[in-house]
Length: 186
Image (cartoon, rainbow, N blue to C red; front, side, top):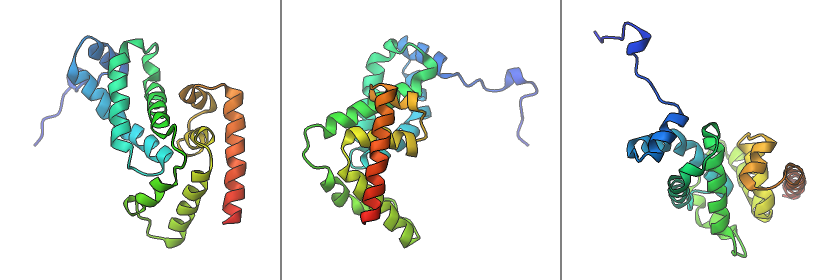
């Protein structure tokens, strides 16, 4: 029989992000490790969906958390940690894609690494979406993915992309129109 705590005071206390951030800033590596464990999976999903594959995932994730560790003391609101991490990852990913003339080779080179879908029609729709997304400039694709796929609010997207709310709305609408045209043409 497993002994259970007899009172809530004996239950394990899970520190919130604010406590972990303060401990990490004070030099506690275990606190930063806890923050990593808490947020890495979500951030990896965001990076994967923005990149369209996982070829850059580990590097961008590692770089984003290294940047976060180096500038953790600049975070103003601990409650905004996840959005702040997304903003760092978006900037890291943009830096990796900046200067590249085409992004298409990433999809083709890693197609066999993409998650499999048992329904071939669903896989075809996903492939068509990524083919269309591949033709859309990164500055339009990023807000669309963060809002539509990741479910971030428009203000969160504006913050993550470092652009105004009005610009986010325009870019999402432009991306949506291009996606509709591209999917109908396919």
